Image (tube, rainbow, N blue to C red; front, side):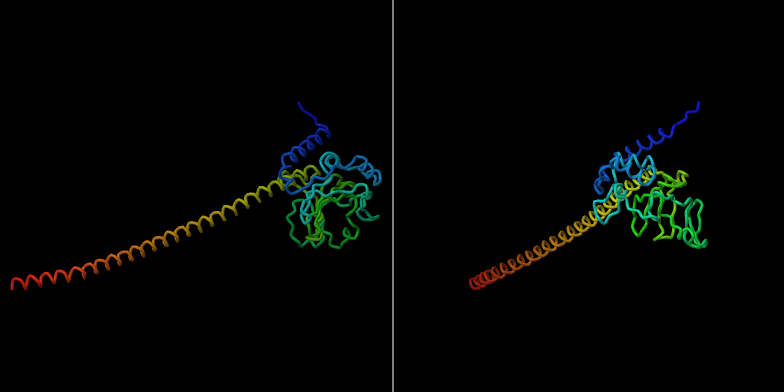
Length: 280
């Protein structure tokens, strides 16, 4: 018997996975991050009507039911997902414009073909800067930044609709779709990408806990070693004091014995003298 799943069943499953993952990780994440208020549906619809696009279903669900951004409490820290102003979305006519389609379909490397690359799927080398000059910033919404100009975005217009891409041009001259080699997935939807991000942050959290515990254990070991050394030194010091006191006491006893001997010796000599006088 073959069971056919509808797209909505698949999306509902992803929605449940997102909620379960967030619920399991919330206590961990809320130590470092803030879950911002959700987006009003009227603001999303206004954005869609203005730019003639439809927000991908899984991202829409996240915005309406989870948060409009999960941001770091430390202003210098990186956010898991950026807050988006859908009422006053920044764009220019030919850049960052959701109305225009995202043009890329494969990873692009803005350098010569001599560069070695471990990316497992198709790569286009933009040797003559045609793609660069044309631009690739349209048809997308920026969702995460990683520093040094690197960021991830979700495509809302074009053949890569709904997929997450990363712009790593400033650091490594490349733009590529996010993928999961372990699951043999050359593309990731928002929900899939988000679940990976949550897992990654949880892993980092536990690694930090292990690192902190290891540091504490090493510091405790050092303190115990120092305490042991101090105890050994104190024992030696007390032992030395006892030895010195014992030696001093022996000297005093010897002096007392010598004085007693001196006191008795004259009396014995006088007695002998008197006896000698008496009998001689």
